[in-house]
Structure formats: structure tokens, C-alpha cells
Image (cartoon, rainbow, N blue to C red; front, side):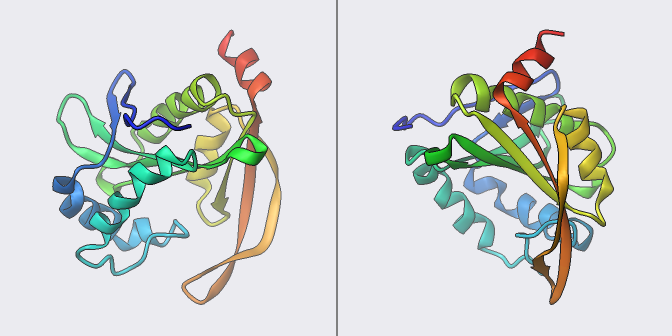
Length: 187
């Protein structure tokens, strides 16, 4: 994927766009909430000032190399940044890992599912991926419900697969194949 123009996607309620430097304080506040950080593997707590901008700086090159794409989730009506969603791509195997987080004030409103539906479409139609998978810590069943709503199949539990805050955690893994997504999207 040698494209240099970063994509922007739209859903009924959301714009999925590239992060801007001006988003950094909001990301640091939302992602830095202990309730968000404790349910994700890669968000630190405390979330130090400057980390968001460092993270943003990796997005363009990852996209140009075909290794990933990360979007800011922005509410079209209020223009609030509400979270992040992205794909970590493994081009060799034509697959990607879906990841997302939503700021606590925006939980339970269906934003993760809405954004992820669009990201699956983008991954399968635009990026021509064969498989998209996702994992969640088993103590975060809400994330598993999002994956089920996307039509992903629960594939199993990866026991003590990750270390989060000095404790080994189990991950539930889900996946969907391109042809499964195509069949489901025709219904």
C-alpha cells in the first residue's frame, strides 16, 4: 500500500479521520482514564503528556508501508473526539488485527460497533485483506459483544497470553474472513 494520502471514512454518526496534533490533550484525557487503560493492552496509565503526539507521528509511515491505519473517531454532530480505531496489518498473510478504544463518556452508545463495521468494509474492500481478527481481555466482555455484532466468530481463549500491569491475562480471540464478511453484508 504505497498510498500517501491518508484515508477518511464516514459512517452515519462518525467521521474516521487521521489524528491531528490538536487531538493530543483529548486523547491523553480519554485514553488516560484508568477505566479505559485497564481494558486495553497497549494504553499506559498514567498516560503522560506527549505520548499521544509521539503515537500520532507513527501513523502516516505505518500507512505508507502498508503496516497499519489508525483513525480518530469523531462524532459528526458534536465534533467530539470519542476514541480510536485501527488495523495492524500483516501484508505477508493478508490479515490485520482490529483494535479500538472508546472514551468512558461515550461507552454504551454503539460507537465502537459502528466504526468497526466501517473498518471491516475498508479492510476487505479497499485493502483486500483476507482475514481480520481481534482480541479482548476476558474481563472486558463488552468488547466481545462488539466483535459478535460485527459477525466475527469466537475462535478461542489464549490463556495467560498477555501481561497487563504485572498480571497475566487471558485473551478471547475472534476472527472474520473476507468471504464471510461479503456474505453477511449482502443480507
